[in-house]
Image 1 (cartoon, helix red, strand yellow):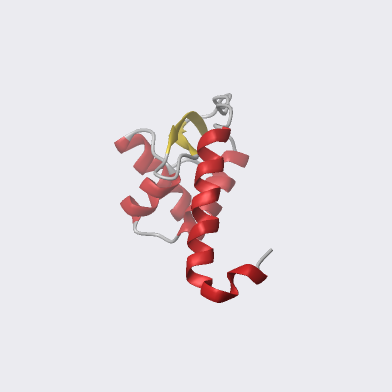
Image 2: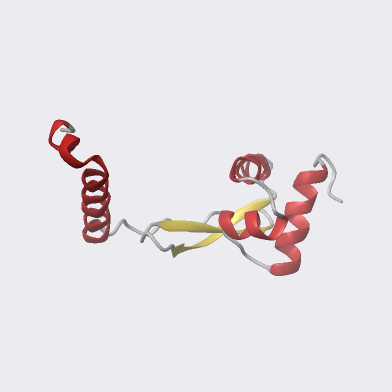
Length: 109
């Protein structure tokens, strides 16, 4: 156990060393914790420079999510956003919202 880390932070560090680089969501599934708990622990470990972002991958919604790994150092650069994908996804969400709203959709502008 690394000095100055609590039990939960140590669990995340052990998971990263055992499995390798993982996203926030993968850590959530592996440890069976809430998103808020994982995010809080990752934020504290990044502040202590015990983890770093090694790369980014596209999720199902075409957004880049960081892959965290054990160890300090410089983070990988975030890739540029893909505006065409983001615009298509945004249009999908707007259409989905309007379908749910029905006749009230015209008032949502």
